[in-house]
Image 1 (cartoon, rainbow, N blue to C red):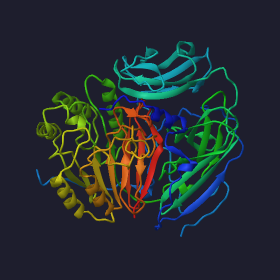
Image 2 (image 1 turned 120 degrees about the vertical axis):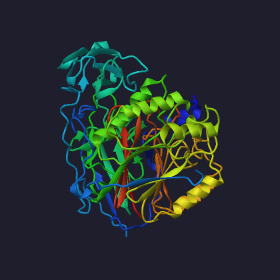
Image 3 (image 1 turned 135 degrees about the horizontal axis):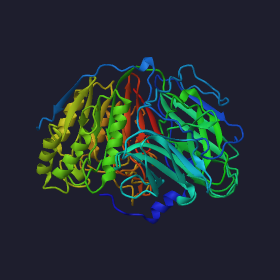
Image 4 (image 1 turned 45 degrees about the vertical axis):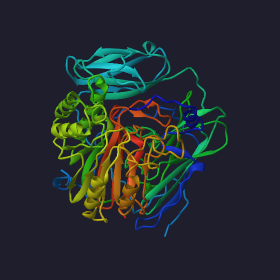
Length: 591
C-alpha cells in the first residue's frame, strides 16, 4: 500500500524545478554505443515567440487510433502458453527544417467514428462571465455531461456542475459556476454512471493579461544507434518564477491528443536547458516542440525538430498492451472506470494480440474483487486475451501465499504464479513473487525456471518479461541513490543480482514492472540498456498515479507496445483524458 509520506526531501524535488519527464542540463546522461541505426545530431533554433497564447493552440480534434503505414502492416499472430515447470556518429547543425531521408513521416490521420457518443466545443479558452457551449450527439437518455477541476474524474468526487444529454443537442454551462481560473475537465458519462464516453479539457483565464512567455528556444537532438537524446534550451522572457510546459507541436499549433512532454519550474532570465526522457521519439504527426508558460496570456514559442527523431520505416509484427496496478475493488468505482477506459482503447484501436498485467490486479486479493475484475473485463467485447501477473496486493491481505496463488489460478485461468507465453515466435515471461510481502521475493526454483526459459530465447530477438516489483536503481520510484526516503519502491531484493545478471545477457529484453504507481511523467520511467543490458520500464498504474514527490496525482496510464522488425515502440497512454503521454513515446532499437 502506498504510504502518505510527503517529506522535506520530496519538496526539494519540486523546488529544484525538475518535474515531469525532463531533467536539467546538469543531469545529462552519457552517450550510447554504436549500431547500424543512422546517427544524427541536430540543433534546431526557433524564431521569436509566435502570437498564439498559452493553451489557445489546443484544438478540439478527435484523436483516433495510431495509424500504420503499409510497411507497418499487421501479421497473423500465433500464441501458446507454457506453465512453469513447478506447476560513426554523424553530426550536423542546421535550422529546424533539417530532414533526414532515412526517416519518413508515415502518419495519416485515422478516420473518426461519427457514430460514437461524443461531445465537442467551439473553443477551449473562456473568460469569466462567458458561457461554455458543449455540443453532444449519439447519446442515450441517461447519459450526462459533468465539469470537474483538473485531476478529478467521475466517481470519487462530485462534479461542479452537470446536465443530462439526450440524443443530439447543445448544453450551456456558465463559467461563473466554476471555481475560478484554471483547467477543467469535461466528461460525457454513460447511463447515470461513471463510465467515461468522451473527454474535453478547457481553461478559464484569469484577469492577468501579462505575457510571461519565453523569448526563444532551441532544440538539440541526436540519434545514435537508434537511441535518441533531446534537449531544449529556453531563453526566458520574464524574471518571475514560472512553470514552463513542453508539448509536441505541428506547425504553430500544439499537437492535439498528447499530454505534455515535460514540465519545469524556473525563475530568472538566464537561459536554461531541460533534457527529455531517454529514447523519446517524435510522433509521426508532429514536426516540432512548443514551449508554453502557464500564467497570464503568455505567448508560446514553437521550434521545429528534425525528422530523424521519428520512427524509421519497419514492418509491424504484432502489438500488445501492458497495464499494471488496476486495484479493482467495489469501494473505489473510479478504478473500475479507469480499467474500462483502458480496455475500450484496446478495443477501439484494434489489432492487439494480448494484454499483459504486472500485478496488483485487485486491491486486497479477495474472491469478490477478482469477480468484479472479470465482470469488468467481460463487459468490454472484442478485446484480446489477458495474461495476468501477481502483485503484492493480490496476496498480502488474503489467507496466505498458497491460498492466494490458487485463487489467482482459479479466477484468471493462468497456469501458475509464473509461466510463459509465445506470441509471433517471441517469448513473453510472466514472473510472480514466492513471498506474500510488499517487496516480494523470488526463490531458487523460479530463478532456475527463468534461466531455463531465457535459454530458449533467441538473443537477436526481443524477449518480454513481466514482474510486479521493479529492481533497485532502474526506474521511477526505485532510484534510491537519488532519494533514499521516497525512492524505495523496489523489490525482490533476494533475487535482484541473479535477475540482473541473467538479463544482462539479453540486450533485446525488456522488463515491464509496476508497484510504484509513479506516473510516466516522473523521473526516469525507462532505463535503456543501449545494447549492453536489458531495458527496464515503469508501467505507471491504471488505478491511480503517484508523482516524483510520492504523492497521489490525477490520471490513469499504461502502455501500448508495437513490435517491429527493427525496434520496439512503447506508447504511453493516459486513459481518463484519452491522450497519449507526450513524455513516454519511446523507441527501443534491436541490437
